[in-house]
Length: 293
Image 1: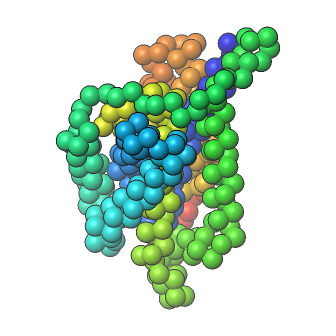
Image 2: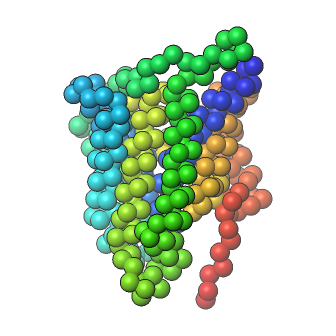
Image 3: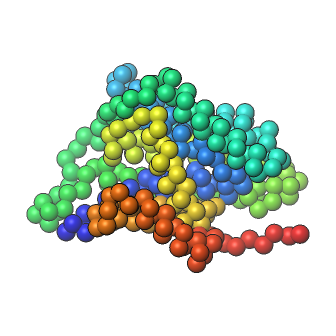
């Protein structure tokens, strides 16, 4: 029964990683850049929800929507001010800028919110589900994380496949210049991608802090790195890959803590990643792209 409990917890944690990884994989798939400030947007979203619920008395759902809205605006602003001027710059310049934006958000959060941890309010006040005569207990946060992740995946897949804007995203991902010649606004499409990814980051931040009720300006750093690892694991640029990578990463981390060592669980995660990339450099669901010379 312990194995089943750890498996459920791993899938729940992996679902949160998958939602975060979607932001990484969408931005990389369309803009071909790594937004390392994505993890800090998780932290901003969690703080917005915390203050909306704990200090201003808004209901939980309103706090989540407000966090998603403000992080959506923040994501668009970051793309417009920091990344758009570097659209044709060297990839190293974009990478350094992304790291700089990350440090800027972290230090600004420390000045605004303080450096101490705060207790995140419980947004899912309901009795846990007990199965097998109470030997398996599944919290509402766990069910919410898994359910929201699956719903996000379905909605996002339908959006990319069926809508006009989703088709524009796929066109920009394939060839920006050709998409521009077809009348597609590349800048607008990339801004929308950042907006969606940032809103999902806020949602993931709320779920993460609900599962682990501790919040600080460094909250998004390690989950952001692990979600990036999940995106690479599954095949960065692939939406199903983000889901698969996140779920596998969560299960490996929880099982590593339960059966091997809590201190070595992160090392085990990255060791598995290295092995996967040695066997399949593009990730599990990634596709090898041949560049025309």
